[in-house]
Each structure stands twice: as structure tokens, then as C-alpha cells.
Image (cartoon, rainbow, N blue to C red; front, side, top):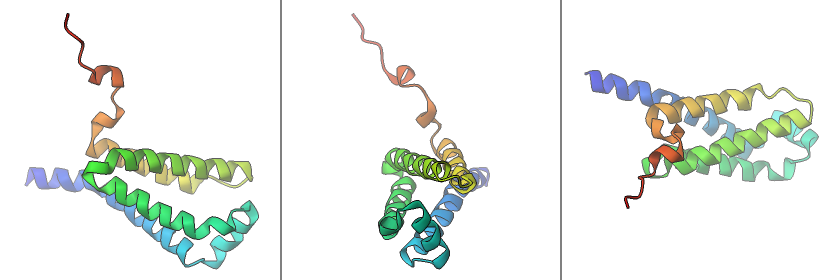
Length: 127
């Protein structure tokens, strides 16, 4: 029972991130009027559907064990860029920052080795 509880706790942030990102992607793919207005103001309306598909691909990569590290890097880059766009247009960047925080917590709980230094992972060469 203890292992099952640990798995649930470890996967909860990943499931939450997947849900939030999937809803966001579906809203982009459906061209919701509120998003169309926001994306028009920022000048990236023509990319709205592409961004929706990209979000789905990145979260899928993050959820699959073998591609989790790549998915983590892609999601971090995507939401870092989203925060940069929000800041450059004088908007509030809270939503992408919250998603990014959830992604980082999820990655740490699923695989803490992502955050270890590359120096500590290398094996020293013996002479």
C-alpha cells in the first residue's frame, strides 16, 4: 500500500500538468475567442494551432518514461518562452510560471536525477 501511495503522489503533479496543458492546447486548436484576442495582440495568431499541437506533443513526450527528460527540456523551453512573450507585451506571466513550476515539481518527483550535476554522473577514468 505504501508503494501505491508513493506512486500516486509522484504522478499527481504530472497528471495535473498534463490536464492543464491539454486543456490549453485544445483551446488553441478550437481557436477560442479569448485566446484569439490575446494572440492577435501579441502578433502570433497565425501560429495558434501549431502551438496547440506542440503543447500536446511536448506533454506526451514528458509523460512517456523513455522520453521524459527530452519532454521536460522542451516544456521548460516552451513555457520559458511563453513567459518571455508575456513580459515583452506587458502582460501578467503567472499562468505559464505556474505551469512551469508544476512541471519542475513533477519532474523532480518522478526522476530526481534530472537535477543532479553532469559532473557527478560521470565516472572518473582510471589510469
